[in-house]
Amino acid sequence: MRTQVGIIGAGPAGLLLSHLLSQKGIDSVIIESRSRFYVEGRVRAGVLEQGTVNLLVDAGLGQRLMKEGMHHHGIEVRAGGESHRIDLDSLTGGKGITVYGQQEVVKDLISVREQQNGEMIFEAQDVEILGIHTKKPKVRFSQAGDQHELECDWIAGCDGFYGVSRNSIPESEIRSFSREYPFAWLGILVEAPPSSDELIYANHENGFALHSMRSKERTRNYIQCDPHDKIEDWSENRIWEELHSRLETIPGWKLLEGKILDKGITPMRSYVCETMNCGRLFLAGDAAHIVPPTGAKGMNLAISDVRYLSAALVAWYESKSEGLLAQYAENCLRHIWRGEHFSWYMTKLLHKFPDGSLFDERLQKSELEYLFRSEAASKSLAENYVGFSFE
Image 1 (spheres, rainbow, N blue to C red):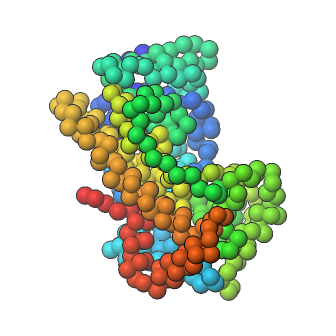
Image 2: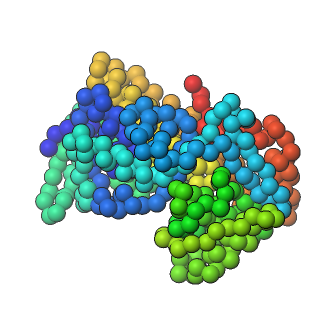
Image 3: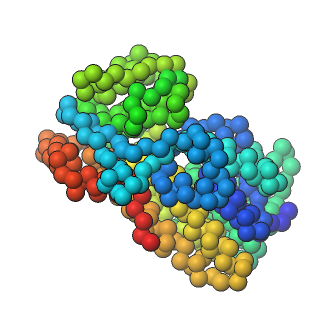
């Protein structure tokens, strides 16, 4: 098998990269270890920055997004019995966010790749990346018991934190940074309309909580929990009890319950691999960086990576210019570290740290009071939330 760009991973990053390249006449093959059913159904992020929306619309992917996506003009922060609305529109010159589930973005991308006869290989096993320091790297894999080898000009590793791509870079060449958090998120997808028109972030003595949504009929709720908890430790009654306690701190506001369609526990970490390029292998998305979901940056950073990588590959195929390829990591990392910092800030601001001192608690309370009463603090949060641009 032969293609121009081999792409490992059929998440938003890999699928979008394939689509953007195809618009410039560049062939690619996507290799994914999971089934199509799994990829289209996994529930992940749901907040899109305006820059992400613009890119998807410009790429011809906006039909369902613009119809079904929910544009939000603000977010709400609750703490100490108070509520503070961050007016994204007024604080950022009219920018907002759009709530549209990652799985919906994936469905849109798979659909358009099918329409354009883009090659996607699902349920690939034993994936190996070979020869990244040669001009013809290869991806070796098996499918349905048959062995295959894909020869490429370039390989894009978009296969997430646990994928094979980053592990294909020699450990001696990896420059990475990480932070583990002493808590996790328990998330549920609920068949119930949203209880609020905007996302609600809550700081509570029992721990953090978030009320979000995926559509006009489904909500997504999260609570901070112990990272060692098992999902079976959390009965539905216990989950709802904690959500009510942590979110219903404002008089007159009630959380709507419904059938729980999905639930799971996600560990919290920050991670950056600054080695986003090694030979003919480039990393994008979660393969290169992880952020706590508190800042809603994961999918947006992945799409930002793909914007730079697609432009760099197009420049190489059109003129053999390697300038943008050489600048790829540098261009991406400015946005990645800004996203990492903001996600860390939101996590520190809103969570209860089990190893925190009383001094730490007072600092957190002071920071929340400053946010609630300072337009400058609210503007800084808003600017980062909707996506800070270095251009």
